Image (cartoon, rainbow, N blue to C red; front, side, top):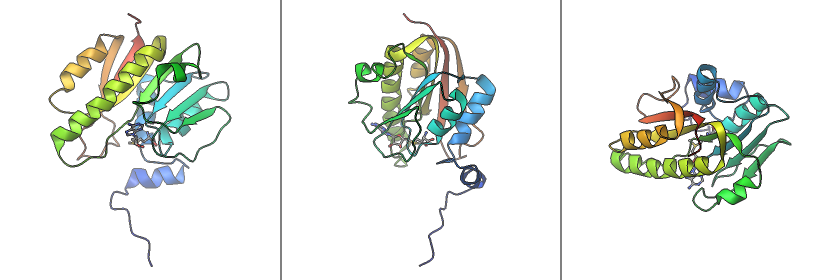
Amino acid sequence: MPRKKNPWADHYTRKAKEEGFAARSVYKLREAQEKYRLLRRGDKVLDLGCAPGAWSQYALRVVGPEGLVVGLDLQPVKLSAPNFIFLPRDVFEVTPQELQALAPEGFQVVLSDLAPKTTGDRSGDHFRSLYLARRALELALALLVPGGHFMVKVFEGERFPAFRQEVASYFQKIKLFRPKSTRASSREIFILGMIFRRQ
Ligand SMILES: C[S@@+](CC[C@H](N)C(=O)[O-])C[C@H]1O[C@@H](n2cnc3c(N)ncnc32)[C@H](O)[C@@H]1O
């Protein structure tokens, strides 16, 4: 039987395949990195909602062998590297202490591409994504080193401004970022909190 074509496949999907990345989402992190230099060689990075693994693959390339990437997801990830640890866990069940044990001095960067399964109900999708984003912020506040960076995805909606304000209160600088590779129909936007100020 001929293989079904992915109706969402586009330029970025093909490019990701050619460059050996697990998903087209890699270009969102790459664009953020080229613009804002969130990741550095040697960094310890926490990647929340990491499956199928494209952001972790990219982060591993940037941090190099002396860095560490800890990825977490409910879904499996086919990625193995000596400095990659995958936790097949629910972000609401993992504790900050468990994550801290993997990087006792803290993480320089916390990334969250966590996303609910979208239903087409914009308001419901917004609230579910915010629920995940809030959990990512909670973990970032517990685990980031002072001066660290946070990048989190949210589907825009009525509570977005309040969440943006909340993130802003913990970081010296904040940026809103909508990558070029985000599909036109998507309401996703990323908040970048740069230079963490421990309260
Ligand atoms: C857009 S995908 C992430 C893509 C990833 N950044 C990459 O580049 O390969 C969103 C992920 O969030 C995960 N996710 C959603 N809810 C979760 C939860 N409660 N705990 C852990 N992972 C969750 C999903 O399983 C999904 O793999």
